[in-house]
Length: 259
Length: 349
Image 1 (tube, chains in turn red, yellow):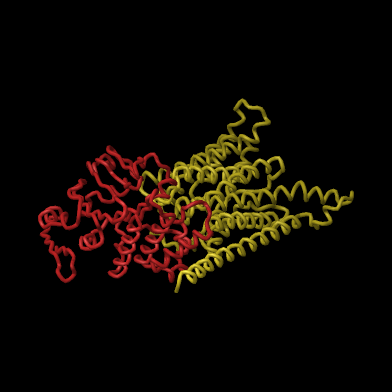
Image 2 (cartoon, rainbow over the protein chains, first blue to last red):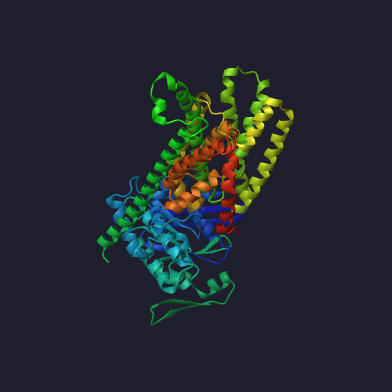
């Protein structure tokens, strides 16, 4: 059971963006998608989300091709947090969060209320709920969008129907503390037997929170595996065209990447 | 804070918002009722509603004025006002642009060109006279749909739905429509010419029950379809890709909104001409009163739009008795300054 891309190639405006990429998002842990700007990370994420059609290869969700699933079926199984988007009209934070509720038509029932208050508490956005979304800072908006994305697949959660969450740079506007909070939440969510993919630029965070790291470079997957294997001086220096060193930090007991 | 108090506080927040919106909607309904009563009672022949409805011979004339002249006119004004305002609100939601108004972006002009082509050229079509009353509204709806689809395709193809693009394209479409209308003016005879002038300014003066009822039916269908898309319109505010992530079939939604909004506007324009600014001013006021949720905004806009047009028509037909002002003049006098204020507020990038 996984959300997988098999030998996927994607062209946009007749330009190849992703070539022959194979990755699987398994449940129970987080997968990081890293690589330099323009490597094709967001495009691959959008193909996994079922938004972009693939030129060749196949994207499947628990064995079923995503191209054959309706928007509604997809929405109940996977949620996506895209990079920052603005909202024109003055919706309250509570209303924006509510848009993430897709489990069944009925709202304002016990299940809806319980899920919402859990997500609000976990994401610590209770104090923002009555505010107008447009008046929040960029970081606050990002936390609300993250909460909406979690709420979409919060319940019901079972072994048969795995839920997947795709996060495209979910911490780009966050301060250090909130960055850790969001990634901890995402990892904890994944450990409830869900699959989480996160596009990140910070390799230290990727190494610290993710079970699996996928490195993309010029549209191809150039490494895929355990952080300790994948993150090495030679490969990273090559991919980022910068001298990079990877060390095991004794005191922190984790891998540290220096540029 | 534990879960229970959080959940209670959250439920309370939602409850307050819904209660406020309900109060605004009740208030707007009362305003509409009051304006309708005022409009029915006021005019060249003063009458009291209760008296006129009493069945006795002396008041036959008053009753006839009320039932055959004023009632269809007030119903038409209310229906067209509701259609323009709800279509404005829906198009603003669709384009994610607070300055979209069926008049300003050219949808009404498209409807007018469609209707005019049928009025001026329809005579040469081989159809029986009984179908003509339906062909004009049908052509108006087709014109409105064509312009809206074009606007959407254009914005999609050449960049964006920004406020500026949309208004500039609206200027271009309105200019093209002026060319077409000018050409029809040149082709038309005297009676047709009078009709053309009325088109450009807008008027509810031609309301008769046979003309009003089909319009009312089309507008009602449009309003119901738009109200049913309210939640999807909310989701669309997250962005098109994001709406798809949350389970909305975006292409179907867009088609539904474009068709329903254009049908409502087209049907209205076919009988009352071009009335601008109603679709711009009304949704904005409704949002100021109770927030941006579309179920509330669409419903509130329909109510306030109806009130505004009935009131504007009342002014139009009583300000300079026995002559009549075009109602478009009244709405523009109110709407244009509001538009300027809105431009300053929105701060076009």
